[in-house]
Image 1 (cartoon, rainbow, N blue to C red):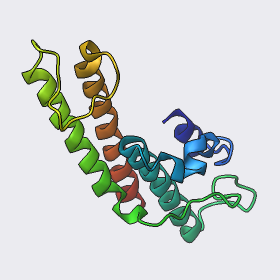
Image 2 (image 1 turned 90 degrees about the vertical axis):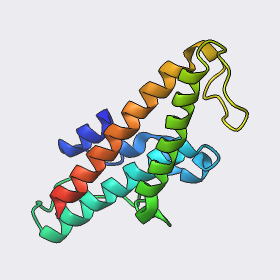
Image 3 (image 1 turned 45 degrees about the horizontal axis):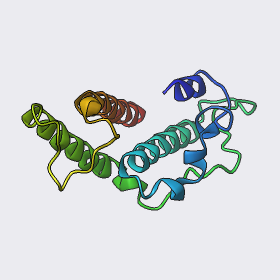
Image 4 (image 1 turned 180 degrees about the vertical axis):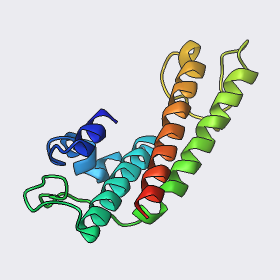
Length: 148
C-alpha cells in the first residue's frame, strides 16, 4: 500500500509498486490463493489508473505516472480478480469462524489449512488478513469507480 501511495504521488511505477517480485512474476504466487489474488487486484488497479489517465490526457509528456516501462500490467483473468479476492475472503472468514468455535480446542477442521504454524495466533492472523483484504477491496472499488 505504501508503494502504491508513492506511485500515486508521482514516483515511477517500476520503482514503487513493481519493485515487488511477486507482481513481476505473478506465476510464482499461483499456488498461494491469498497472495495471488492480492497481487492480481493490485495489478488490475494500476492498469485501470494508467489507462484512464492516459485516455483522459491529463498528464504531461514527461510524467512518470503513465510510463509502464514494459511492466506486466495486462494479465489473463484480471477482470475476475475481485471475485477471486471475494472467494479468498470467504475462506478466511470460514477459518476465523472455525477458530472462534474451537478456541478451547485450538484446532481447525480438517478441510481448512492453518495460515501459520502456531494455533494460538491463528485467530489474530485471520482477523488481520480480513482487515487488509477488505481494505484492498474497498480501495480498488473506490479507485475504479472514481476513475469512471
